[in-house]
Amino acid sequence: MKGSIITFVLCVSSALAQIPMAANDDSSTFLFANNLVLKGELLALAPTRIFRHAETPIVQPYSLPDSRIIHAPFLSSDGQTTGYFAFYPCAGSCTLALPRNLLILHRQGKERFFQTYFLNVSPNGRFVITKNMGLRPTTIEDLDTGTVINMPGVTSVANDGTALVLNSEGLRLAPFGGPSRLLLNISGVREALLSASGAFAFVQTSTRLIAIDTATGDAQGILDGLPENVSICLSSEGRLLLRRDRELLLWDRNLGWRSLFSHEEGFSMALLTGNGDTVFAKTATNHIYRIDANSGESAQLYAPFPSRLSSLAGSTYLGSLFRYGTDYSGDELEIRVDETRYPKLKSQPRYLDVQIPWEARELMGQNRLIEVQSPDSPFLLRTHITFVSQPSPVLFLDYRLNRIVATNQDFSQFITPENPARAGELIHFWATGLGSLDCAVPTGKADPVDPPSRPLEPVACYIFQPGRATRGLEIPTLIYAPNFVGVFQFDVVIPEDWPSGLSNIWCKGNAEIVSGGDIHSAGKR
Image 1 (cartoon, helix red, strand yellow):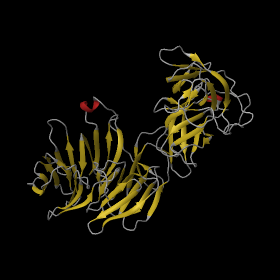
Image 2 (cartoon, rainbow, N blue to C red):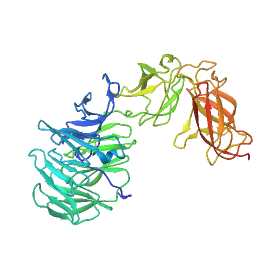
Image 3 (tube, helix red, strand yellow):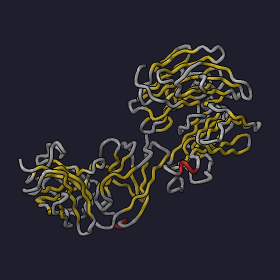
């Protein structure tokens, strides 16, 4: 268990975690957050909401009092206190004007509102720690009696109000309203957490993870160093769950560490229930599993499904390929606009490629909803899509570098700084959005290799370099790319006298809309 040291996230059931999942102690209620729409809902787009797991997920009736975004549910160990964490989606000066963190709790028929820079709640939902910047003190509030105690350095609170405090002397234990006692003389603490019963404390230093019996003060090092990309969750009585990449590990004081569950997709989050008997885990593709922490037996609650779409490349003109970045792009997904299914194209993992149908002329210039659905998921993912009204080339780029995706004449290598385009060389690059073909190709079908179809709209391309006049490029061939769907292939010639350096190539059609990017060039060999 050796590895590089990082600051980990500790979570007590749902109290401190503020991950988008929560459960009561016996796991009979499981809550999770997402921004998806349920099949059959009338909503076009949905904000992030809390769902309760059932045969069909049930939306929880939580509403935000302002412009914040729900981040995670709260559920007490007995399931009687509910609520949610939220935050402002802003950065910079707004963080100085108003605390970003928000907690709303529903307990014993009352709604409580907390706005602060740091929040922690006891697993039973009774005690709330709030920490503010500046002169306002750190406090613990007993929600049942209304008693508020100032307690600098408090990091965690148990179900009876006992608090774990960090100060210059080390780690201290303080009953609610009573005197504190030194628990461990230690420095360099990064995180410290108390179990629900107050019987165990867990501390991370720069080098170790330490378990402490709070009654005896006995301290035991249980992990030397932490692997990267891990988080740790704590049950009520001191059982630990460690998530690292593709594996979930469990620790308790009797058995030590053992492997509980692994998945080839890796885990984005995991939650250990308060009684330590159940784990809920979410993979990188949004699988959600329920795992018996004693036997390791697992059951799938939700099949993989995308949680986001981000526009990356392509055109929304007739016949064009359009690419989304996503966290899941399985073959079973269906893409629809106005109940019309769009061809989903084979692509790399984490990309969702679709073709705008050639026959969708009535949508040109329109803003509509595009929807992703799966027969295995109760959810729909929706976002807006704007269809352009005129054909115009959109070049494929490496957007990280603003560089055109281009190859040498024999297609053997991509053009890079190490393999620049030579003066006089014919190179290839690709685009979408050019519109109608001289020989129609059905929607969803690739162009035959011979003879290839050609676009009807005229296109011109140019090359530019600072300090030099823009030059038009010879385009010996412009075709609908063989064996591709919705993609055009440009064959262009770099001018014979073009110098070395970083150049820019751009193309346009009749619409006067320009698309281009950088390319590295070099003189003749």
